[in-house]
Image 1 (tube, rainbow, N blue to C red):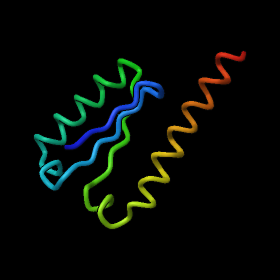
Image 2: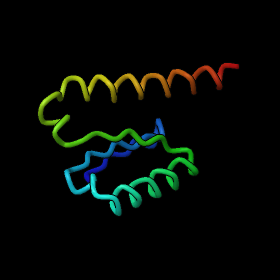
Image 3: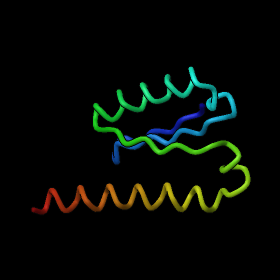
Length: 79
């Protein structure tokens, strides 16, 4: 998987190839996601075919997730 992490929003974006459909790799991915979430990092995962075929949709989803997280954090600080 290729990954991108933004510390400001504590979010990671992972792009997985076909090998991640294998049972053992899915379990490793699940374990890694659980470990990251335990640290307060939200993981957003896409298949590489989604990125290649529907990049605008993927980017819109990443943008929405980042804005939601950052907006809620601003609200927490203001409250």
